[in-house]
Image 1 (cartoon, one colour):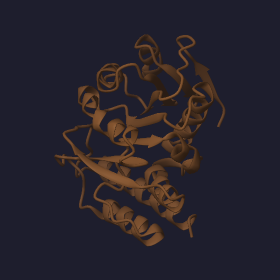
Image 2: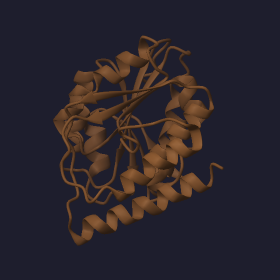
Image 3: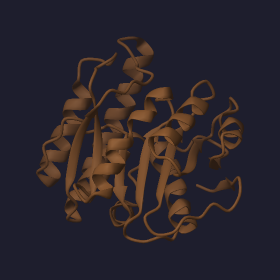
Image 4: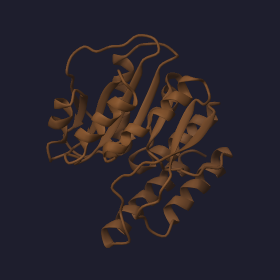
Length: 240
């Protein structure tokens, strides 16, 4: 899982830092807008991008937008790519227990500017892990993968969730450290929630008006959700 680290400079922050880490795979058309919007949502945040083997210039555009980029040469899956980036970001920003880490997907575009309430909730101590619930549902299939993910989390740690696979999250530093490494692939969020609750973290879900690139009821969409379901099942099985 070796990756290369590319930084725009030494931008370490002290206690109470906010660090945003964006998951991206072939997001050249949206990564710039997502990073700019994140800068508005959490002013002064250190921006990182976990580039999972993109071939479309995502890494170059992210660097041009001022982000530190950790890029894998080949696609290794969201969970592993984000594990590498989060581990490096933790080391690069030593900070304190007051640090807040915001995680999000690179396809949010301009709606990433609405992620601020997640960081606020964690910063104020209202939750150790805050998860965004999309106010509007766009695309998707028949809900099988989503239903399984919610069931898996409830079965393993007793938590009932509305957005079990939302990638838009904020965590306290200690919570992030407790849930690393992330589950592989699309199992990242299911495994993260289970591990966080088992570590004693409090979880809050916050409804936000976000949008992203949705997959519909097409062959490609069903293939994508099938891969998700397999990764959810693996994360569930490995957390007995």
